[in-house]
Length: 142
Image (cartoon, rainbow, N blue to C red; front, side, top):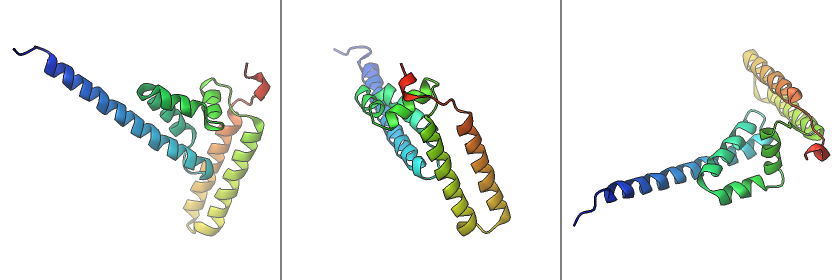
């Protein structure tokens, strides 16, 4: 005897499994891109890390918990989501690393004037964004 709906149920379960794996993969790739973005100024950091948190939240509570409890990444994501911004030391280090790497690129890697101008404009835009983020003191979290 054939049961109605069993094929549909199996199809939905396979679809959910596929979506879960897609979200886990997207979250892992986003985490890697976000970590690389910490060290390379033209690669974004915040967007990919926020995307990873959302993907992991919807696909695996265990992996989401791992990400949110990471010493540096978890705090960064939690503070950004809560609108607290960045600590002053993190702002200073980020802007310093940004301008150091952009300056080295302008001097040694890019020869076209428009490429240098574009890098400088990106550095100004990113600096403006970082400066306008709220600055918080770690003891003010609670």
